[in-house]
Length: 574
Ligand code: FES
Image 1: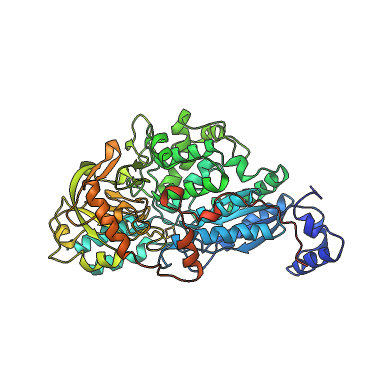
Image 2: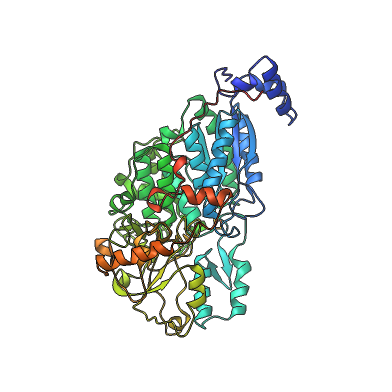
């Protein structure tokens, strides 16, 4: 196993003053002399933290990864990475995804490691870890958190997020008491693990598995299932082999692998957030992937997975029904089956092992749960660089709609007026929210699924067309047009929309048009430029982010982070 050509040997293999320094201090962690004989040193980038139930079990799970690494002849060294708790961070965890990616990239580059196990699960940790590792391009494998147990409340299953939105609307409509709403709180999140719906975390975990950068069944095994520990152990085994054979992320994460991921995302009715994360990851790797690919590639893929928010069941049910390999089997020849994975098996070989155990949860392509279910990518004068919508979570009757805009200039304006009885709004109106894009908020938060006006909820209205430059939670639903680019704060046409303007949404033809003539829009633009506010942040991460963040159609990465840095650092520290 000993390999003197390993990257780690340039530090730990040196018989001189510098080697003394590298070895002496790391030995103090409890490592004996003989482990520096040329065995692969494997980093474990762990987003464990007590701030987030999604990753609170990852220290323990890392212990099983370490067992696997030791067993295969490697040396595990665990290090922390930002945890990005989705439900805790202000103004939004998305503001820090790229900061995690930078942290991971530089931690891997700067330290004497040969490969890395990435451990995360909450929404932004998965893309952040992958983006950073992809830019270094050392062998890596992903071990996800796994989902929490199904929520339970008064005899019913509760879905993370999805039922919060549903119950919250019911309270506002007077159909549920506040006391009952509060009582549901403890039943929703019952264990460690990520949200139990097909929200962003499980969508990303499914996509990670379809990309081939994790072992099979990584997405669906519950966080507390003993088989996740086994998967962690086996992932520790595999990373040592990946280092031995120098299998890098760029060997796995090819254009064809991304195509498979987009198909899996559609079959699962996955989160809209996956779009920006995959675009950003592709940008790191130099893989040509466009916003339109999400629409075009997935048109033939129906909804095969019956999970909230597009369907009925939860991640535990998905696991017991067969998980991602079973969906791969159903996708059949739509997949690029020859694509190699970190498991050492092709996608086709893994798909052959898949089996569906519950047809209420995973359907056939011949009898799916819904029609074509990938995201729709819209074009038009309101979104010159695109916008997206998740049809499986929308109201079919609203997918073609013409209505008058009710405009909110920013999130504070929205909160101040949405429940004002005097607000001029009816069920045919289109709610427009500005100032919630990457630069505007900043960080592009999940506020696009804005709650409906209380007076309309009271009349039984449960969905309206909503348009914004924001994202929405992967657990949310509704006829919600998101990721409008360019955003309002960057001078996109969204900034020019005024109350009463007519907007036409033609989903089947993928059009989103502001019915205001060009001369009037030009006048409004001149007026907008004149009152444009100065940047609100003058220092620190916010400033760097706002100055350099790309729009949604480029994955919301920072412009100077696109591409790779490589794993080569030639200068010594002393
Ligand atoms: Fe972490 Fe939902 S809050 S996955």
